[in-house]
Structures are given as C-alpha cells and as structure tokens.
Amino acid sequence: MIELVQQPAHVVIGVPVLAPFDRLSALVPEAWTTAFERLQGEGRVFAEASVRIGAQYHEVVGVLARTDERIDGLVHVLVPEGDYAHLRHEGPAAGIAAAFGEIEAWLRSTGRRPGAAKLDIGYTPDGTDTVHDLFVSLG
Image (cartoon, helix red, strand yellow):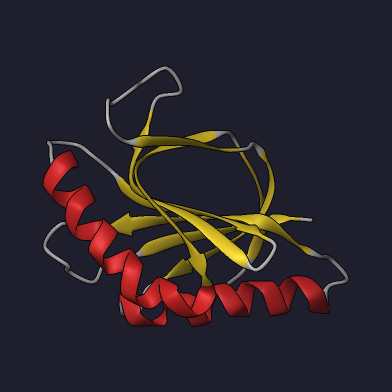
C-alpha cells in the first residue's frame, strides 16, 4: 500500500555513483561492495539515496547517519525533509526498480508529480532479501 508521509531530513554516508539510468545496474552493485566493506558495523542501517539530475542519476549507497556525523573519504548526502510517497517492498531486491515505478505511477494517477529524491532503506551486507522502505519525494 502506497501512502503519503512527512519525512524528516536523512543523511546517507557512502559511495557515490553518477550515471545514466542504463548504467546503474552495473555500477551500483560495485559501489555496494565497497560500501559494505567500509561501513559494516553493529547497528548500521544501510540505505541508498538517489537524486535525478537531468538524464543522470546521483546515487549514494551506504548508511543512514546523524546529520552531524562524518566519515572521511565517503560522500555525505542530505535527503531533504518533506512530503514523500512511501511503499514497503517485501519482495526480492530485484523488484525494487519496478516498485519505485509503481510509486511514481501512483503519484501521477492521483494528480501529483514525483520529485527528484528517492530513498531506499533495507539493504544487508550478506545480500539477504529483506523488507525495504521506499520513498519518493513529491515534486
């Protein structure tokens, strides 16, 4: 079930990827390998932040962090507070792109415009399929 929610600002610290959509499927898994090696630790919540910039996507794969936390050598991105469409994805990670498409289609069907920011919370270092909370900002 897709719902509208108010989200606070989030910080994701991790490995950046800047590429057109058709290159993400090759580059993002490589970035995750690096992020899992660098950021494993007790209590870490893994997440992926994405912002569409024209025809490019700027992804940061890593961990949710406090707004004042810093980790040298990694990118820090702020996912702004605001209104988001939320979907809890309970299927395999391979279906996440389609689930984001479902959220965007739902927004359009309700007369709203999807925004540029996306947040995906729920990755695991061992690759186990878990529940993912998916968020798309409103445009």
